[in-house]
Length: 81
Image 1 (cartoon, rainbow, N blue to C red):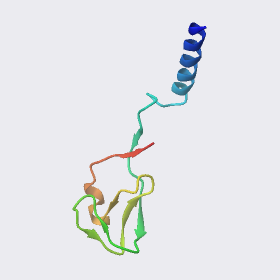
Image 2 (tube, helix red, strand yellow; image 1 turned 90 degrees about the horizontal axis):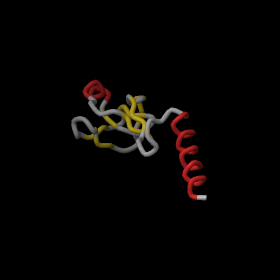
Image 3 (spheres, helix red, strand yellow; image 1 turned 45 degrees about the horizontal axis):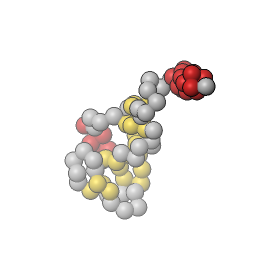
């Protein structure tokens, strides 16, 4: 009984590994996917910490916001779950 339960659990873990994720609990890490947005209200730039008025860049996946001019200085990666 217990051995079968362990095999079933291992089987489901192996299926999970086959679909591309290295570890079940780790988020995927990738580059940001920036797009130019028109903001209705000011937002804080995550790079220079100044306010972004009207237009700026935001990652389509994680919503990382920055000035378009600050985008080249972004050193963090996009983390999506």
